[in-house]
Image (cartoon, rainbow, N blue to C red; front, top):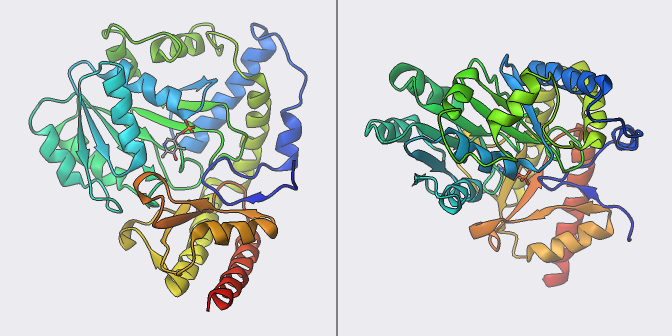
Length: 365
Ligand SMILES: *Cc1c(COP(=O)(O)O)cnc(C)c1O
């Protein structure tokens, strides 16, 4: 393997050495009291981090597993999938592949899902659950979930709200209970700053009660089964969980709470502002300037240099940035600023990026 490149891609992220070391903790019996104590500890800390009293479930899968489980478990009539890019499309595809009735409501790329769009769709009375991408990693914007949830609270209180916070939970400000999010899904390999391989969801009791009435929920990603093992065993996992992730997560959550959620959010805002400044000065921001993501920035490549060349040169300096995703693969590139990355690290990376771009421009001139 070549030397390690520092990751500025939107997952997986750099993982601190102490966290990696926790992954090497010796295994324990997964039906022991110690295993329950570990899962209980993780659950309580996650409730603090996510601002929720809801049940916390873990899944030994990346976030996609719990997203797929959610469309199956919480759709009795029909799901309204609101898409602002690649990850909304993925949620729709999951519904279709599982035979779950669903309609997709697309926004123009680089734009948000508006509360008005949600109101209009739900006013038909056809839908009993909706999915929202909180932070669209392909375009670098975040949705106004707080405002969308106000529409639900005022007019459609029975509709289940499922939110994909895979690339924003623990970086951005997401008060789960205040916003009335029934199902809030995230993964370990993004803002939480752990290796990939585990995902997390908070789930409300009313969503669980509803799920119990829905047949064909599957088994491995069945929220009812996952929650039952948390509530009744208690704090166990239906099959064998990734204990390595659990040891590391328990430790990392202590560090996150020690930093404080507000400080963590502020640090993400500051990192985002530095990268946006670079983009405004040197190229162009891709998305709606009023709703820019605080965890990842999508930049229109107006530099006149193919991004592959930039990333190759950055690689020689020990960095990995990210190309565009999906429909934006050729025209944009992305810089992630999430998890435990520091302001200083972002500044140092941008200085190198300045030098690389100047070098390539002079070569091409
Ligand atoms: C990364 C990502 C996913 C997919 O999550 P996995 O953990 O890779 O399955 C889903 N949604 C968003 C917004 C993402 O950024």
